[in-house]
Length: 104
Image (cartoon, rainbow, N blue to C red; front, side, top):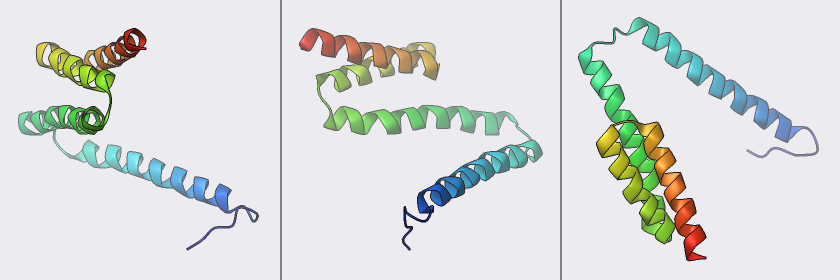
């Protein structure tokens, strides 16, 4: 399947992607409104947040430079101590930026 840029194909692709994104998010809200969130489901959701964080960061650390590796260490350390993904991500970003600033 090919889309021509001259005939509005790019715009059509963007509209389709936006629609699929919206339906996915709305479907998630619709499904989760009907699923009782017990302790087991809550543990699963909390575990998935950390798993996604590790899945995103690990390939960058393996294939990246020293800043990426230090960011992984900082992110893992903060995640282990605080058990909150947002401060862990912030620590990783800050560590990578400072490492690259000092190394350059």
